[in-house]
Image 1 (spheres, one colour):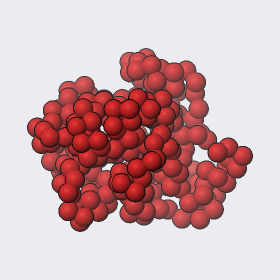
Image 2 (tube, helix red, strand yellow; image 1 turned 30 degrees about the vertical axis):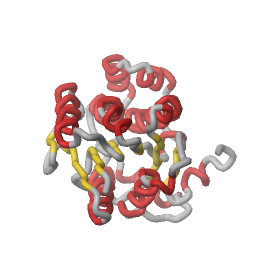
Image 3 (cartoon, helix red, strand yellow; image 1 turned 90 degrees about the vertical axis):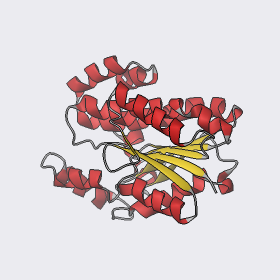
Length: 254
């Protein structure tokens, strides 16, 4: 059986994925801000170090898979907190456990979003993200706003994955990403309840071809596939799990 690690595995998609992996007999370590095997705040350098050190202690022989699911929604302020958790916290953890994944020829699945390609594009913000300039990206995004912070960070993750997938797989680590649409998680529930975002959220769901919110297990199913041997030749791919929304809004873009 395999050894896996998740961040943000206490609720939502992470909790669904953990249940599936444990049910299949795998060992799973969860990093989260509370109610987790390793409690860490991934918005801070100290929290990221604690997460990586904790994973090293619990999986010294390596990891078969790592899924950094921890994230916060576009309704959160300040916008820079979204940037710190959703982009820089993710990258720090992936890079921090890379050698653990290499030891067992493991897989990484990043969590992008279908909001990334279509919303909130901001070239300067993306350039700062991909350059690893956390202070510059945070300073900029606090002036621009939370919607761009969220969508831009998720798009940044997809681009980072595409840029590094070849390098990682040469070391034996397959890396891919999923782009979920609106999913029934505590983060999304907060957006539906927030006065500043709830109207836009309902309108967004109404535009979806499948016109419904996804269940976390539906996204977890796809992540689990990408982690496993059935996806052994899938590398550097971004897979939309969004009820057809991206295809509907960008029909001429692959």
